[in-house]
Amino acid sequence: MPTFVRSGVPNQNRQCCFGVGLLMAVAMPWLQASSIEAADSPPNFVLIFADDLGYGDISCYDSSGVKTPHLDALAEEGFRSTDFFVPANVCSPSRAALLTGRYPMRCGMPVARNENVAKYQDYGFAPEELTIPELLHPAGYRSLMVGKWHLGMEVEGSHPLDAGFDEYFGIPSNYEPRRGKNHNTLYRGKAVEQENVPCEVLTKRYTDEVIEFIDRQQDDPFFIYVSHHIVHNPLRPSKDFVGTSEKGKYGDFIKELDHSTGRIMQAIRDAGIDENTLVVFTSDNGPTRNGSTGGLNGGKYCTMEGGHRVPGIFRWPGKIAPNQVSDVTLTSMDLLPLFCGLAGVQPPDDRKLDGKNILPILLGKDTQSPHQFLYYYNGTNLQAVREGNWKLHLPRTTDDQPFWSKKPDKTKGFVTLKKPQLFNLDRDVNEKQNVADRHPEIVVRLQSQAERIRNELGDVHTTGTDQRKINLVAPQER
Image (tube, rainbow, N blue to C red; front, side, top):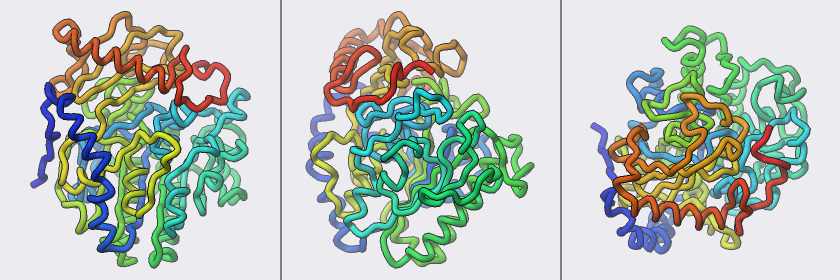
């Protein structure tokens, strides 16, 4: 039976206990990691990143989701987070935050990129940002990325190889004609591997590439970033998976994602490196209307929980205990400091990281989140602040919204909001019962925190003190 690990800080007192938790988070993570690092060689890291996969889309998160036996096994053999936060609800900013451990506003990429629109021609991943593969390289790690980049491959200095990866095999962005003439061009490094590649063959080719890399790199540490197209439109599973689910091509595509995961896990076992490989599975943001949020409100393109809460699974046999289910708040930004800690690499101290080393939580040694506050941005607009289970949605206008959220839709949450609304996620994770009138002191406290982070990270009409310049005119407009 799964062991449910509940946050050790009660909702009403969580903010009071944060001081102790923060002290532990700052002072202890490198020491707590050291027992593992001292006893073993640095672990390999395999990061599997789904695209537009919802919280309720796979069966280990929702029994009505697509049956995913390989992902279910991953969860059963490790740690499954029920409160895994991504700091953006669309593709590009979520990916930038994942690789840097920093909020998209801090690393200069808060909106999604469109390769076929002239205004985005110079908008790409900032070369000054430090990434997971760059930081791991001095520790002897070789890195491979396969799949969707979506951070400006054509922009000078913004290619995956410029961002620290030793090898790259994939396509620039989404597989859609509106993404430009190279939307279906497959690259190996910076060279064209194949033009007009069918979408249906990509998952298998990416998986084959990962397996070949594991086979030749098994004696030395490595980092693999598997950036799937699944389940972003177009829904084009390979012919072997058409009709294999009960949820049409959307479900069939997820079945192919699950099968790819199973093949990668078997390659790890065949190489004899299972116990020295940490595998992480998550998604870039919540689902479109095709998918399932597992009952959460909203989805992709909005700052309700359905847009920012996604699956988060960690597996490392012999280190991370199996059958753990935890509601301790974690984020995708935590992966950079986690990987650095395990590799014996000191994270950069010349910039602020928003991620934390969450190893003590994964090992069951701590049940308090290292994150006192979470910030929900929609493009450049700060729309919500969360402290523990208290989440405050902030006033906004249509003009504040990014272009993808300006039109009202039942999946897009509050397009406009005249007054702040407060929700207790512990009792109301669906964000249906506004309790702002009952807790005015919490509203004031979170409004004050919103103003502090607005001054630091910026907002639609504010440039933050630690906000990287966005190389884009009118970022919120198409």
